[in-house]
Image (tube, rainbow, N blue to C red):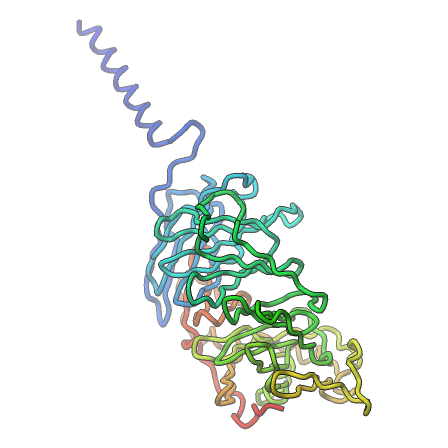
Length: 462
């Protein structure tokens, strides 16, 4: 009896061990199940330090996205289990940790490696996620997934050409605009419409494309001004759209004497609306796009030895306090005198004024003499262009400093490398992100040790 009992006990132990292994392993061939996602959060200096510390789950990619308004910091976590996970922090606390499911009809090879390129978060409501293929030559359409934060399930899914998202100025249900350099603008309501059901298929019934007229060339930036209205900066100038009025257009000022390797038109909201057609010039505009006042490089230039930075100021956005922030664009080989498309010429041989709602605005010509236009910038640029500026439009004060000096004045956390530039910088969030792999440091913009570099009386509009 004992000879029979011992083999049975061994067999039972083997079966129990096998069952335990299968439960831990999941289905045949599947990777270990993910149960938790470990981040360490701590205060460091004036900022917050975030560190991914989950040693159990093999990572495929971890991407720190740019900070969002409202103190929100998004992170894309892609593991070897092919799970797309979205993690959201708000003011130093983890508030969202959800797995984003692959929608029906979306190819595994696309979704399992897709990069989260842009997102919109409406706290306590939804997160709109824009995924694009890591293979630029694949030709696959971007994927937009709107995750309901309460149920942690997709509310709706859509696929359409586009590169960026913008949150509409809606008072009720809310909406987002999808746009890009080579696609129509698509408006998508966030809430489900009457008769529309939650669906995981890549098609949004209520999505509405907005065709663009031929005056618009190469859309670069979109800024919503209402539920069905927005400003659009493009290579040809500035356009505004309102559902009740249609399109209005304002051509770009005559070309800047300099050409740049890294510039595009930019829009910003800072106690009003602002448009930068090219570095070195800022135009204050109304909500319908009508220009109000122009500030050029002479008005914005800092004091010596960096006075020529005024011609290179590249608008990065506006912070919550209403300040405009700039980095420096890199000038390429200086052009000869600007040779833009000829403007409409009046009887006296001057550019024809453009009529806006309540005033006349004349396109500005290139500033400076031919000799200034032809100056060689190579020596000036060789001294470095890693500087950042903050301009207060109301007080006309300019603050700035070289980035190496800024980082030298701050004690960086252990494991965080000293930044070499200021690439993904969106002042709208009120924070700057310094990241090194699995570790990131969120720093309030107020903590940057800037210095006064320009007198208030220089910032008068023309």
